[in-house]
Amino acid sequence: MSTNSTGVKHVVVVGAGMIGLTTAWYLQERGVKVTVVDRTGVAAGSSWGNAGWLTPALTLPLGEPSVMRSAPKTMLSASSPVYIPLSPDPKLIRFLMGFGWHSLPRQWRKSIGIFAKVNPLAMDPFHELAAHGVNEPVHEAKPFLAGFLNDKDREGLLHEFAVVKESGGTVDYDLATGDELRAIEPTLSNAVASGVLLRGQYFIDPPKYAKSLADSVVSRGGELISGFNVADIKDTGNGVEVIPASGFTGGTGHIKADAVVIATGAWLGKLARKFGVKTIVQAGRGYSFSVKPDVIPSHPIYFPTQRLACTPLGDRLRIGGMMEFRDVDAAPDERRIKTLVDAARPVFQGVDFDARQEEWVGGRPVTADGHALIGATKSSRVFVGGGHGMWGIALGPLTGKLLAGAIVGEPDPVLKNFNPLR
Ligand SMILES: Cc1cc2nc3c(=O)[nH]c(=O)nc-3n(C[C@H](O)[C@H](O)[C@H](O)COP(=O)(O)OP(=O)(O)OC[C@H]3O[C@@H](n4cnc5c(N)ncnc54)[C@H](O)[C@@H]3O)c2cc1C
Image (cartoon, rainbow, N blue to C red):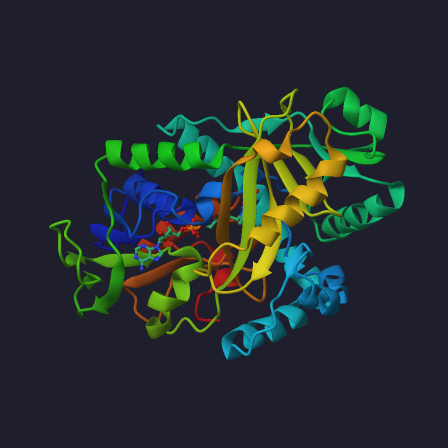
């Protein structure tokens, strides 16, 4: 356990997703008492139904030139993997303009350079968590598979890998034929003609991992309060006050502490805006479901063209994808699950898609520039951790570690890339 030189003894963490829980855990490493509150409970947001990939080779900005090339078509088609419903919402329009700008080739390359700095740091914190009480395993994908209907489709992914290497990142991969992929995963159909085998990639079972993290925080003396919907946060001059929405019956009432962390995922702007966080955190909603193939895969499988992320979760396969820029709290759109199923059917065999379970929607917390918000706000007692878009699981523990360091007065220089007041 390291020291804490700032006098911060008690921190309230708002949000029990991957970011909130890992921040709480690393604060405990620094000797800080933590109270984690969530309006629902552990992994009630995006940290539940995601793909659980810890894949440095693929941890890249969402906004990239090919997304923008297809944007006009996707805005109009509800069956497209990236869907932007036409809306007069000025906040959404502002976000999309920023997103478009950051997807231009020059910005995209710059952004990849930032990911290349943090990706190599992302796995060590998982090992630290494992060594000190987070029991849910991290699996190495041996190897991680990417599948394509033809060699031409594969070029896009290989181009991304080339840019990653140019930017100082590393990617260790081999090309494979469809038959070679089927020899590894017989549940892939004959339509899969081409592939990539990636090494040095990992995956977790997201709901189990979040529960294991929460259990570890509690077993180390942390308090975890579910059903605590934070309505407001006040900097009182010598501490903070975290105020629940009316109707909270948990008995705790207002919580006073030395500092607070806002880790509320796609809802981050609601509480953080008044502390000077102007960057829009837009929900990029994704969907997932699970199936039980005749032969359950043991490797994660990515279909970049179809934008399908498939992850083995023990007795079933989770299939997820979609990027829907709309209100985080909007009702799930049934058409999106159908689109996922239609994309998945041709690339698998021996899967009864009609028997699917665990249909889920969740909002990725997306920023226009593709980078997270990590650090202090204009109040030195109010911190934010969030906005990781597609990569809050892979980068979650690193974020928790960096943020805990900043809170106790030891900010890492890499945090300048993630300034919440930018
Ligand atoms: C389909 C899909 C696949 C994905 N796959 C991957 C992947 O393979 N790898 C990867 O790294 N990332 C992946 N992601 C992204 C990842 O899920 C997110 O980046 C990450 O979960 C964000 O974590 P978070 O803690 O910031 O937010 P969340 O997990 O959303 O947690 C926010 C929490 O805050 C709580 N909350 C909100 N408002 C309040 C309030 N006012 N008071 C109290 N509590 C509040 C919510 O209840 C919620 O529990 C995927 C996402 C999707 C949708």
